[in-house]
Image (cartoon, rainbow, N blue to C red):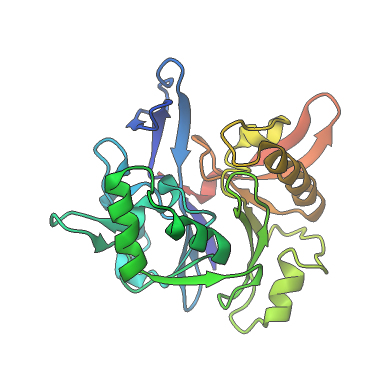
Length: 287
């Protein structure tokens, strides 16, 4: 069982929401942000799991082939992916679920169950428009063809996974906690080992926290802020501060989807002047 960050790319993203690829050493355009995109691959004995699905074709010159190439390094194809766990339904997190390589929409991972918060799913599908006409068509295709499995808070049928509603970035954003449990683990084991009411410390670093854009990078750990682009900036800040403290206390590894350098790290301490101390885990990153 192992966890890997699959870096889809690094992008300059401005107010127009266009994702323009740049090299790791390049700065973003003036007034733009530098964002990485890294879905996370979890390999278990009987499952191949992705946490979020990348941009796919929704970046400038984007393609789902990048993710296929990453999977190939592990001896896998898109048909091996059994489960996709989503933090929220913004297009930079779900764009890789489908493609138009043959001029029509097709599922990128046709055999995967797609797990998503029930209220996030219902609210997104109830809207008249998903960003623009192209993305609205994309979402309607997914709603009709993908194997969505809307779920509420709590443990998943996927061993080791537990969801917690945190809100903030979207109204129903979730944090996923993944505990590296044996295949025969029970739901009770998942609850107690991955952030449930009986959560204990994890000195061996076997629990992973993925909180979408609430903790999207190491920068989110280093400072306290309310993000004006969030659905509820104050709720996002409160969730971020609480999760950082909990991650340090319990020894969790953090999966930061938008970090452009090292999206997997852990917190090793807190200094009154420096803030949270970070240990990067670069061996988990596939570029």
